Structures are given as C-alpha cells and as structure tokens.
Length: 265
Image (cartoon, rainbow, N blue to C red; front, top):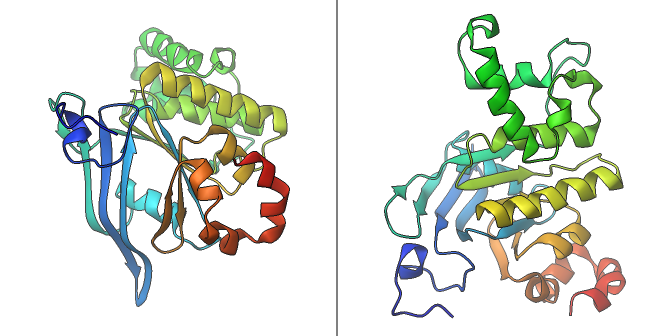
C-alpha cells in the first residue's frame, strides 16, 4: 500500500501498489473500426520498473491497444505520463519493438545503416559516421549485441534481429517500452537471452514495459503484473492473482490450467 503522506508522481492518483514512483496512465481507451468496437474503457497504470504483460485470445485487441498508445490508430481516451517528482508530466517517450521487421533479406543494409536511417533524414554519406557509430555501439552494448554492428540485416538470426530492434527502441531510453510478441518464431536460447536482457534493462533503467504475449509460461516467469484483455480489461493483478482467476480459466481452458496448477501459487 502506498503511504498517503508521500504523494509524488503517480502515487497521488494511483490506488495500486507500485515499485517505482513514476507511471504511464492509459485512461478510458477505446477503438472502433467502422461499426466494430475493438476496445472499450481500457484503464491501466503502467508503473516504472515493472513489466506488465497483456494476455488474451486472438482478436482480443492487445496489439490494437499498443498501436493506439503509439498513436498509429484513432482512439478515444488519454495517455498520460507522470514522473517521480512531477517535473515532467505529459506524453511519455515511447520505444517500440514489433513482432516482425519486413525487409528484403538480400539487401546489403547493415545494422549500422538501420540505425543511421532511423536517426537522421540525411543520406548516410553526409552523416558523421564516427560519432554515430559510437552511439550505435553504445546502444547495442545495452542488449549484448555490439558485435552485430556491421552484420547485414538479412544475415541475422531471429533472436539477433529482435535484440537489434530492442536496441533501436532504447535509443534514447524511453519512459515506456512496448513489446509486441517480440520472440515469436525465435528458438529457446534466443528467447531466454531476449527476456533476460529485458529484465536487466528494466532494473537498470527503471523502465515501464508493456509486453503482448501468447506464451503464458514466459508471462508467469517474467511479468510483474498481468492484464487479461478481451475487448476490455477482464482481470488485472499479479501473475499469481490473474492465473488463479476463473476468468483466465474460461479464456484459456482447463488443459492449460492443469499443466500449470502447481506453478502459480
């Protein structure tokens, strides 16, 4: 429980206990496509230093919510950021890692080229390559991928590419990091390396993270908070609370519950 005598950052308006003092508030989000209401009355507090996992069936609106937060699709509601001391309030700086990056695998484009193209409107040959290279190296070091700086994008494994995209999302360090099924199709070793890296980053930089995932095992292992969503928020709490909720059982079925009953207590 937050001590009401210390009302700084999100504490002044947050009823949930939180690890950090800053938070991003998603208030009354709604998305409608034509006559179809995809999301309705979504309210979430995403706390700094915590990984919040969005789970739900296909078509539940999880990725749609991320796109709304990014401002890529029209939506109702407000997105607010409050820092620990109330110095910077407003819209959060957002980093985003998509599920896939579509590109021609035969392209000669390197990891360095990708960063240069993302960080400057000028042609690469007009940029200060030495200065940019140093910055890119520092960004890649955060995700244990500095050795990939000259590698062609098409030569990267799935796990390597996602770590490069993670490094790109962290340049500069955001207030809110969005991960949209970032390990889909990645082998077990790459998956564990990615999530271990994310866990270290969360602790080192006190990041607020929203993760969309269908892998409930990973959610149980890495998430601080879990949100079950299907058009609206059905359940919100710690992994232990949500994974014991009857709503989750109805959503994912008895077979999953029996296989994990001993691991959610």
